Amino acid sequence: MIAEPRLIEVRKNVLKQNDVLARELRSRFEAANVFVISLVSSPGSGKTAFLEKTLTLLKEKYKVAALVGDLETENDAIRLARADVPAKQIITGTICHLEAAMVEKSLADWDLEELDFLFIENVGNLVCPSSYDLGERLRVVLMSTTEGEDKPRKYPTIFNTADVAVITKMDLAEPCEFDRQVALDSIEAVRPKMRIFEVSSKTGAGMDEWLEFLKEKVIA
Amino acid sequence: MHELSIAVSMVDMAAEEAAKRGDVKVNAIYLKLGNLTGVVKDALLFSYEIVCQGTSLEGSRLIIEEIPVIVFCPKCETETPPVAVNNLCCPKCETPTPQVISGREMEVTALEIE
Image (spheres, chains in turn green, purple):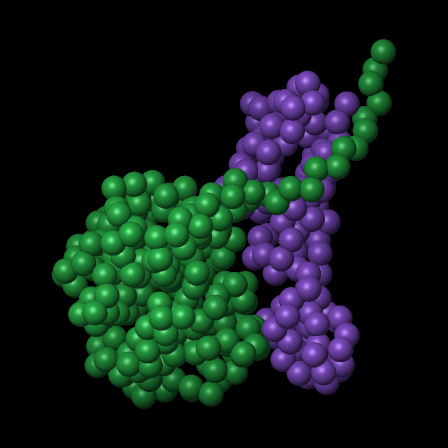
């Protein structure tokens, strides 16, 4: 007898495994009272420089640490270690994004209770990281003044999944003839009402506002 | 190209469901895929075929239902497709509409088994 094909209902999120793990991580972060921020952007938009500056300024008052994802090299972790804070590299090999399991594994020998802020720098990629929850409380998307004002319209998904946008390299805005209003409008179009920061990691301009925003998060 | 990772998750899940039901043969997976997920349908179909090779799902089909982006316009108080995926505004009154009702789905809804 040949069995007739039949349909069975499943209703499961494809990335359920990642989502479940991310939820567990989120509970762990909450229990340990550590505020977790992930950074996403294209390669070269200044994530690491921005993170280095943020860590340097925050560590005066807070306990901070960073995980940083790349396909290859430990270079970014070495750079971040210059800020004299715990920093660990996640080498993904050929994988174009971080997943919750990679974060969990990297945290194994860190005491979360000791931390106020944990930053997770994703692989430089504006497409793939958008689907993967890492258990973060805040997802920050960065774009630089050197890469074109319409980036958000070209990559709407990642901007739409982010909570906050940071425009970096503001010190280069003028030489690059960066049209600030077009950039702000592009962000607004894909993620209406998103909070936007404009910074220069080099000069420190705009960093105060960003740090104030972060500090309110740990007080709240 | 994260479609490959997504295909792996999907095939793993289907194989698990099939095992739960006494190792039934899966003929097809039905997937709801939102247009705001950033996942490319063709790339996913291509990855699916590769991932299935050598597994119990080899030869099975992936049936994708694309889900359009729907937003809620606070001014018109109505659900509507936005002007575009990269312009989340109400097409009638042009109010920015941050509230996404659908378009983020990536859900296996059913399996066809025998």
